[in-house]
Image (cartoon, rainbow, N blue to C red):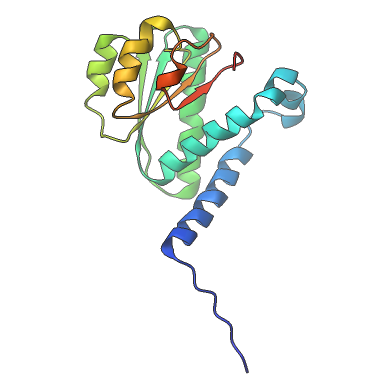
Length: 173
C-alpha cells in the first residue's frame, strides 16, 4: 500500500487559518445582504470593504492591539459601536483574546493630544479612525503615527491624508 503524506509548513498552515478566518469575518453580516447590495455605491466600494475586513481579521488573529478612535457625533459613535461589537463577536467565535481599545474623540481632527496618547500603544498596533481623521488638519499627526502604527481611516469625507495612511475607506476614492 502506498501512502502519500502532505507536509505543510507553519507559514502555509497560518495562511490557511487566516484565509478561513477572513471568510468567517466577511460572512458576519448583521443586516440583510440583499438590501445592502442594492446600493450602487456600496457595490463600488466592495474591494475597500474587503481590504478593511482582511486588515482587521489579520490584526485580531495576530493578537495585535487595535485602537478604535471615533468622532463623538452620531455617525461616529454608531460606527465605533458597530465595529467594536463585530470584533468582539469574531474574537469570541474564534476563542482568541482581543486586544481592543476604544476612545471617543472630541471632534473630527486627529490632534497632537491624540498622537501623544496613542504613542503609548504597542508598536505595530492597528489604529482605526472612524468618521475622524480624514481632514487636512489631521495630516501632520497621522503621518507621525504612521511611522509606528498601521492606520485605517473610515470616513465619509474627502481624503486629505491618504498618502501617509495604510487604508482609506471612503466613497470619495
